[in-house]
Length: 615
Image (cartoon, rainbow, N blue to C red; front, side, top):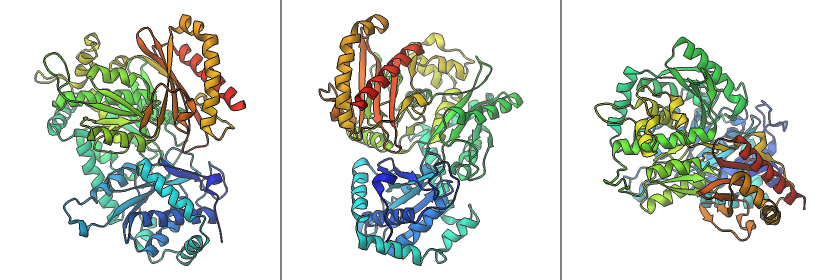
């Protein structure tokens, strides 16, 4: 009987169950083969999820374009069929696509006794290297399982993987049905990616849902009409480097061109992964070159995006008029621009309005993760929007936003600024379409018939009327952002390798180092940066605890040290161990444009953590 050491080989979290699935163990491997141990892992995960759903559930399946995806499916499908599941397989789908498909299965009009519990399993390792793979689980609410639900599933899995009888049954079912000849839908999918009724259903569900998300329910048709009208006067072109991702067979081209945007792309064949998967740094350079060529041919091409393999995030490149070339935007910049767009969207439609004194007439909020730049706080403050933070992890941010809505807050936008992209309600996952359309709305919904455009609305609320001009460009919008320097989450400087496995112990040791350093450096901090005080904050799931006495209370969650000057919040340093990769992440975030301050704070943070780790 085969077994797998999940503690050693896999990371299981609410963000996904991930590990190196490539049979040769190389995280950059392009092999399609997985080990027998990983087949057992996949089959066990499928059985545990099916049991979690209940008797004879419907399970929607899909994957990104990683080479090992088919092998993982071949291990899961016979186990699901053996359990009595109605297996609906859409093949290659983007993560937001399978989630929209799952949401479409939420038939509220059916009598309770006729409902069949439905969930999805998505095979992906998101932005991890190509040899990695993993699983995401969700229900029909359009997102992954909440942190609590995920914890229950992980617990059931850990019990099952240690049960010899359970594993023997899984192994037997996989071996007996390894050819999957009886599952015609799966076999046909390997021959023709788009020839599937399930794929067509997923595609249509996603297309319709995206329209609802981008424009909203309140005056959305008027906003869409305004954008289309302005595109006739001022065309806008968008390019995409698909990098062989799941978005190669999704709605992008059809959706964007139907709205009136021009579109061009490269690496549009599924599995044509030509460079690093994470859409950061050098991975954005091919898109920059594509945009420069497109702009030279047609100056209306101003935007580009690069998705990760599952297509739930996509960072942007822009044509910068001030530099006369294409350049990549930092992830934090992308999220900040999306916030400006969606807050302005609410004001434009009148869903979020103000009295004669400029006081908001309703409660509005944004839910973000703990390393999101304080730039977003400044943007939210300009609109009268409250800011709430959760621990890193999409499930945490989505759950926090749901909780806020239950408390009566209007929450249109949420997300993880450290990773770029945004989640726009009612969507419960990041989506490049929503991000691209947020920026496009800023550019293309302009003043018309006496009504201000979105950028003009932002300039008014941020008291930057001098930044607005009639023929503004994207460079003008970026110049209006509150100035912050923030460590990119996926830069080499943001990653540490530590020895201490218990992060609560590490953080308690860190407190000792920090307090000593504060006493030794407080005059220097005051003189050089104006820093006069600090506060420690822990983020665990959706909970935030301020004024920490014991830093170890942060546990495996985020720990943020907030620094104050005479004007208020000025900078912060942050730390957290990744739940999906064997790394420890750090960050510094500082108001202003002086990169040397961010560099000094980050180096100081690194030094203190490494000293704590060595104790």
